[in-house]
Length: 442
Image 1 (tube, helix red, strand yellow):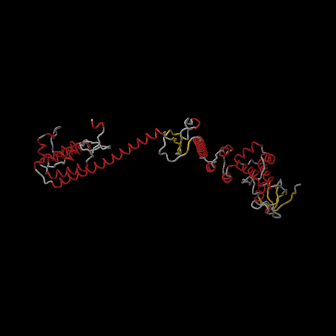
Image 2 (cartoon, one colour; image 1 turned 45 degrees about the vertical axis):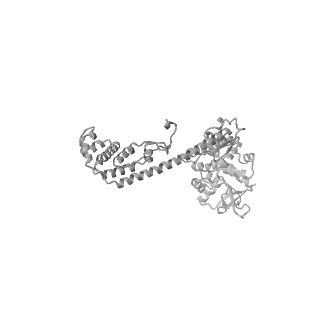
Image 3 (tube, one colour; image 1 turned 60 degrees about the horizontal axis):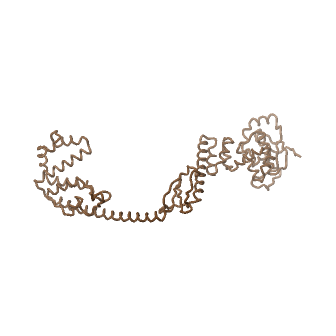
């Protein structure tokens, strides 16, 4: 039987496990209490300690029903309030608070979830909770699904519908769930939920792929010596992938590279032998190529030094003036014409040459050329050509004629330079150091 008595308001405390965490605005209720008093008593139990249930404090009580009335009474300035003192187990206290709050003012989804979770933690079954709270079995089970959500994060949620929380509960990754919970009630919620759902789908699809691949293949990180078969993206469904029919007779492997998997298998003995032969051939060709390139480079440097030494010792001869100057001007003319479409007219103006298409064949052009000092011209030519020279071999070491070098040698020989036999062979392509393939021999 209820024991109703007036209790000092300073000795009554809110229940630490009350599902409703916020009693809301009690101003209107406080004004009503001021004018009419409390029309319905509070229901209390002897003091309940959240952190030490064994503690008993004589004369202190904890509210089970009437948290809003208690808050309003304090706001109205009452010293005492009427209370029905009852005895209840912990389970009965929580169930009563859940049921009472639902009947008077709807609890938020998060508050319902936490209340039902507390009863589950105390060992109640779904049937027990339906009897204690009056909730339907489907409602209890639905709230149970939301129990995996972080109580701390759930309590922080402002807004959000039941369906929002049901969708969040379907997110299996804890960090993803927390991220979406933080977005509840904001404009970012739908994006955060969709992103988390996509990541979950990708993880599941990838797990399905790896499970299927593991049934016939071995995971590897080093693929050297393995024959590439195919690749499969994790965004594709593994249901459409057919396991190789020869999996029982040959070893298969897979390499996980993040967004896809690459599938390999062992080479057959015939393929392995052929690969070994081809690798040996490639290695031999590479060694020959390296040796050829090294020899060509060394000879090129030797001949370059011979030319430089000649130019350094050159003292000049008037009879060389025309050839030297003509080479230089032609060289500059062609270079300027290549770089600048206005180069020809600028060159004519600079040399005061006639406006004639064939001006380089004119007598006036020849007279201009022979006025230029020979030593200066040859030095300038050497600087230009030697610094802009190109190799006389291609990427594989076969001979490749360079016309500017051929013209340069013609000028050098005109000035008295003598080419060694090896140098001649090197620059006319007949040297044995050059690679000669089947096409070149023809």
